Length: 623
Image: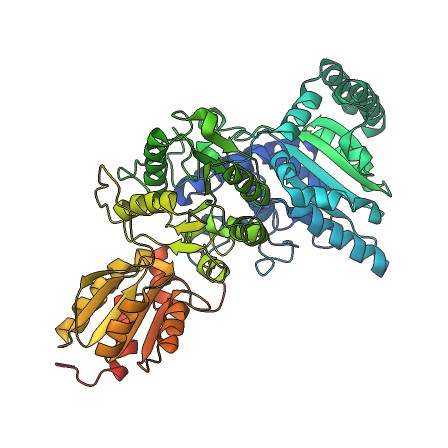
């Protein structure tokens, strides 16, 4: 039994503890994180790195009156433990349990929900300005990782930060997002953190805090800042935006953090505190393999070992296929937005390091960058999660499609992203891309077809998109030589006279199961692997629209504007009056949970579909 953690029912309980007791609490929190997340999986590394920061914030400030805004918010587990959710922590990312991110409906202490990077500063600034307009006195604190500053939204917020009187931004500098941070911003922060003069002055500041409290230490901090200005550049970047800069400070020294936050709490101006932290602190496997332990499934809490999946994931098949394409075509380039591990492009990088580009958490820039390369004859493959590509919609339309540039959007996590929940589900990409002129949209039913679609996209003289699920597929063998597919041509897997099932991607297997159930009731069933969400195969639609008494569509996507909608449009354009039953996700945000459980709950199974289609069928044998 823990000595302190289990007694923390709210942040008020935290404030009764001494510094040594808080340090012991930090140890207990780390132990709880490791043991719990070992069972459930989750973002262990980021949370181990912000234990002291989160404790200090809650010790000095008063949520929910004061607002904490976490960038991405995958590092909010400690916050959850300290705000009345300790007794439910084992349910995190489990069906019906705590969400893995901040969620406004989960707790009054979660002031702003998030799952994408770069949102904290804008949201916090909005809160602070609203507070000022209402005459409030509460504090707003934004906790953002250094990687968030590679995102353009963060700089758009900084451009307006002078419009508020009080705002505290905590820069959690651990040199990582999921992979090692890249680019000029990362180098800039690294210069500050490793400057010898700065390091020496801040070691002195930490000693003064121990003796005299925060004022003397912060005086030293200001001196360190002035010293760094002459070395790092003409002026600290944050001060140029109108914030007072403090730091860097040791993000694991509770006494220093608490004294510093007490000082910053009294400032009537926007400030930034630069805190140096260690991702995975307190758990050796997480410190040694920071990329792996950013977020992962269940693991051994002693060794950090995870269960080997064995079968290759769609992401790995994508990376291997792209490597093959690059081997035979020197114009193929790979682009990611800070997700080399998640998209598996870290497997491509060693083979073609000069044709691999990680642009940081900057999806809009990634797409525009790809467009620029395409104008010079290169064939960019942009590997970006479906949910993150939403951020670059304007660039897809205005800069790629309008100019008919051959950029390939490879959308990992197309469909449910399971435990990560609504911020990460890729359920909208067909809808938001289907209306873009000239863009083809593909969805493979298995691993081999993914390779074929990538090869097809490479031959296509225009923009294309391929969506594929998280995790493994049916285990199909990938051919040595890919096949070029005919654009907009569906594949008839089996013919039939009574019912036609048009299925897309991951739902093709479920369509096969539905066909077996319908055949058992006496119906002749056609199963069609649609392959293309755009353009749909009008000739195939016409053939079965005329022949069958019912058309069924199945997709791992929202029904609104999705593949089923495209099928309805095709039938309408061809003046076919045949009943259509669409199977897909409803017009709502889907919670986190196991994919199989959520499909059962929302009716994306063969059994649920069978119940829905029976009323449309004229004859059903044995029912």
